[in-house]
Amino acid sequence: MSGYFLYHSIGTFPGKAERMAAALTEFSSIWSAEDDGQWPAALAARQRFIDAWTRLIEAPRSTLTSAENVTSALYSLIGALPAGRLAGKRLLVAADCFPSLHFLLAGLAERFGFTLDTVPLRPGESWVRDEDFIARWQDDVGLALITFVTSTASHRCDVERLAAHGRALGSIVGVDVTQGIGVAPFSVAATPVDFVVSTSLKWLCGSSGAGILQVAPHLLATCRPELRGWFSQLNPFSWDLDAFTYAEDARRFDHGTPAILASVASLPGLEWVEKTGIDAIRTQNAALVERIIGAALDNGWAVRSPLDAGERGGSVMLGLPQGAEPTKIIAALRDERLFCDARGTTLRLSPGMVTTEAAVETLIAKLQEHFGSRRRRAS
Image (cartoon, rainbow, N blue to C red; front, side, top):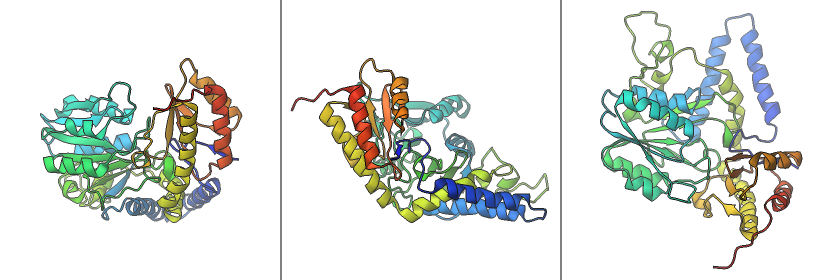
């Protein structure tokens, strides 16, 4: 029985340890060889990672590059925009965005001259509604950052609707796809946006340090990243200090010597997702999530995720009973080899391809012990 419910955190797949070990062992052999083949092989490995991501989100070629994480990718994008593009405008974000991005934006507002406008949750609700985000989105919004799937409610927004609204107003539209990519379909070919940021963790089952930034060609051509270095150049091996020229493609968002290990370690997960297919991953996940939600409703537990599968990512969040201690509940579940986590009073459960039906049933039984049953009255 695998009681792994942490796909919102790291993510795993059958045979992950062996495939990661093989990839890293091969890289170690190449990197340690007493010859001159290290960099050609290392950069080729990084390119395979970039190519896999490009296929995953159906992005135009040469519009995507690697980044250490989502926060650094967003910083690089903002610092690359034409001078004055955000000055005097609002930058719109939802209150249920990933906190790291809000911390970054709050710190950049004064420097770049924008006003950070955070769309709040309605009292008593667990996610920001799309209609509330749109209601705050007028033509003075220079950039809007959309969260594809939230990390605290698993709310999946209507990216197509939101992006269309932003395009009509002339806003720069960015999407953080971190919590949904790999379990929910996303394509920049089907739903054009101006930029995408993500990591290779969670449903993609990669490692930390393997983020990405994808920028649409029309915006890419105007970007001059301030975070730049020798790998940002058209020719990285040009040592002419007075002749710096940005690469024409997404390589302009590179800077110093690129990290390779995270790309190598994450490629097996990307390849597994591509081979397995997102439809198959989501079908298996949805069946387990629906079982958990059904049990929660039967027992009267608070569900803090959308009940409509079309508005939900791959996770389900449950509200802990009043007075419950999250750390004690998590520890008790861990003792039963049921692995999940909590944010405040919200229990986060994300079953994936290694999670068994037996583990779900055991989880439900244990939650009944901790939560009790408060069956809802018929409305």
